Amino acid sequence: MIYFDNVSKLYNDGRSAALQEVTFQVAPKEFVSIVGHSGAGKTTLLKMIIAEDKPSHGQVFFESIDVHQIPRTKLPHYRRKIGTVFQDFKLLSNKTAYENIAFAMEANGRTDDEIAENVPQALALVDLSDKAWNFPSELSGGEKQRVAIARAIVNQPDIIVADEPTGNLDPIATYEVVQILKKINDLGTTVIMTTHNKGVIDELGRRVLTMDEGRIVRDDSSGKYVL
Amino acid sequence: MITAIRRITKAGFVGFWRNAYVSLASIFVLMVVLFVIAATMFIDQLLTTSLTTLQSKVDINVYFVPEANEEDVKSILASVEALPDVALATYTSREVALEKFREKYKNNEITMQALNELEDNPLGANIAIQAKELTQYESISQFLEEKQASASPQNPIIETINYDKNKEAIDKLSSVIKTVEKASSVVTLVLILAAILITFNTIRLAIYTAREEISIMRLVGASNMFIRGPFLLQGIMYGIVAGVLALLIWYPIMIWVGPKTEEFFDGFNLFTYFVNDFSYIFAVMVGTGIFLGFISSALAIARYLRV
Image 1 (spheres, rainbow over the protein chains, first blue to last red):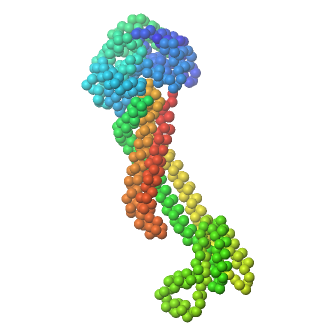
Image 2: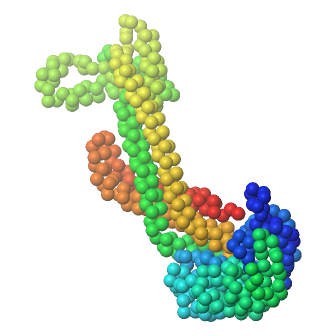
């Protein structure tokens, strides 16, 4: 589904590299965690998938499409196939929880009926039906992240890309978010997630890629956090 | 497509309302700018009107000798009217000239007595000539001087041409008018440029605060038009509100200043102009506001839509 073919990313000075000769693939319905120290290249790797960053060498494929050959005008269409979740939530601060989720559907050109039906379902899935009309500033960190997840899944994407989704959360909120991601994966959506959290990895017991200095140094099918 | 337009419109209104402080700041700056643009418009109008009034007061007067044959006088009138530079030539016959004289000096007994002593009308006919442009008086005057010279010295027709007496005043006035017109167009241009820059900067700051939002919208797969639309609409709304507010501020000022301009500018009342030409002034103000708001938003947002 996702295929990295010998991808390297060099910084402007031409010597230091964020990614070095990264090759791996992700199968449909997999749940892949990427672990590693800060600066190991985890976030750069995710940015390659959503075409926010370009590789210096190599190619990234989404199914059979070379992601970095997509013309700029078509990028919004491509991004709608991917749900994204970030450490800092990235919610629209002047929209309510409901509107944040609805915005992703509106941008996707969905009808009003679909929005009226799917947004409450997504909110129910992350257990936030009662906070639908609150603004992000009125929500806790865990609630914000659940809104972000609801927004990521509402368009039924093929894949969820989550960059440190539990990085800013307390242990209980972390547990809830991981459970939701697991549930989404069980429903058939591929999930790629980066994390620092050893507890999360051990709890999941799924495939783990370990990165160090821009390289993938381990690939365990049912991994533990080894660093 | 219609759904998208409806959603963009709604998002524009909601954004306008929820970012009230940012909207207010932009509207305020835009309002000041439009106020200044209106001021230059009104000053220009005052200037133009007073110049026309002044220009219409400049003329050449040709006085004919009382003995002049009326046919000769009429033929000169006809030839003057045929000149392309002449806007208006007003003929005053001997009889009318006498009536005007009597009217003017009706309270001056000595003059009236002296006039009554005379058997014949002592006044000659005259023609008052207005040129289309101030610069054309020179050639009209030359034309008349030639006429004067060509007549036989025994039977002169033209007594005096008073252009020479006015020449200096006319020349001075035309140079003053030209300088004022140049200066005011330069000032207007500078003001409008400053206005555009200030508006652009304010709206750019307003959108700068939304750059995070814009990047999020891109990440969830919103197309550029879907992101840009609400901001452009907000820019247009700033323009409309600011234009209407600026007009509302001008209204009482006009009521106050109108009678004063009427006194000073010989009957030109700025308030009457404001009321009579309101639709034009409204269109210019709101139109300029919309233009500035739209262009500023479009330029500002273009920065954050790259990548």
